Length: 297
Length: 338
Image (cartoon, rainbow over all chains, first blue to last red):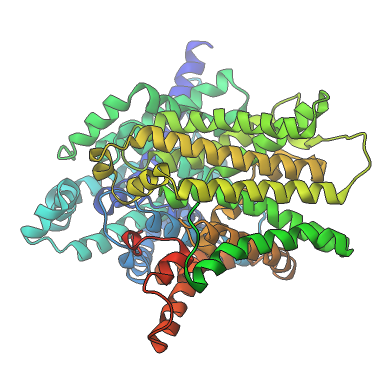
């Protein structure tokens, strides 16, 4: 591997990390506030990709605008899901059997509704942008990857600002730190949970649409990304935004550089291997990240 | 051994034996080959369902990765039979490999609090399927074939499966009534309190996971031996893991007989549903899962118990106050705490 190839892979990994972070952050906030492992996240990711596709094919809306439209749409959708299903779950400090099975059932429902509507063939979003690229010396970068990266990073920054500056962000952080104390000082936990679930879903739909620009997709689309989201938030600590960004970079680097050594067909096993390695080698590091929950930023 | 008391107690005591007796004499009554086939599949599924229930229901650790044990059981059995071992020895070999695999998942995750175990179980199915798809000596993605010298004997397969499900029920019942089972239920309800009372959650979870894996692998081996041909996209499918989890949830998690009830219903109904609504059956299962969790988390057994309670309220003086507990084998401690 020479220097150009190395730089090429490095750049590709960093660009990928942007969208990975956007994908994982939705799951991370939902876990932080509600202690729910949102398995339906995979379903929202998949729906996000189809959302951008439908807007593009039916209304000829540019997929980049489509991804941004996914944010408010999925925000409302997530609040609806919370109101219909999630709020009935018993509250707990750890993920409960009921919450896991409920979110899993909902994922199955989403996935199979998608099968009914769109069938099981692979779809992809093709725009004039898809095949054009930017030349940087000897390295060529597809424009789509750049735009996806920019959109993802922009939304992460907005999220960070919301987290630090708004009343909603502060209530979210309060609930993550200590749900009981937060309620004592007047945080409306149901309302915050609803908004958080909406936010998590919005980021899932948004990053799903971004991923739909990069890869082809089918109703099965979300599952490998669900595992990747898990690995990222485990790497970065289950409930912090900057940790998520760090985890995303690590995973993207490992995945991208593993192609050099491993055949591509082993790709899905890599995230799992990374997960097991982290759990074995770094449990202390993880728990210490866990304990410093208050360091949200 | 404690003798049962009251009508309900005796009913509970006699019914399982009656069921076993019926299952044992069915082949002698010259039934259609299809009935035996359905009962065989049902018995295999029920065994996995009972296995899942040990870790998922009794201990409260949800696993989406039981397809791994099922598939490892199938493959190990096939490979051992290929080199000339007795099939029954091969089932045990499959169970041993599955136990090792269960440690691989359990050792890193059970030590930690939080959702690590469930996360790992989602990943492990993907990882193992990918590896098996690329493995040469198992035929890779195109699958593996078991060749036996003997002629195909449907009844032998059937009795093997019935034997496995009997063992699974016995293991579940013994664990449920033992000190170990009590420890598991304590972990499910409150891990910290259980630890304070002298239970070691880490080793308890590890062992019950291993037992569950072994039962599932035996079922996988029995399935593979009858099917004679299987491939990673079949036995290691995420779908298989979903089915294994669905049965105990339908029947009633955490009980001994709930998974059996769920397995029976699933085994008999699954075929009709997937033939009649090939595109809808997972949608139906997903909706069912949501409905069960939100409306009746104890599944069908819970529903029956509720009906029974209604019925009893009408005839105030029938049965003992503990009848319900005797019938369903659950203590008052566990009231709908999920």
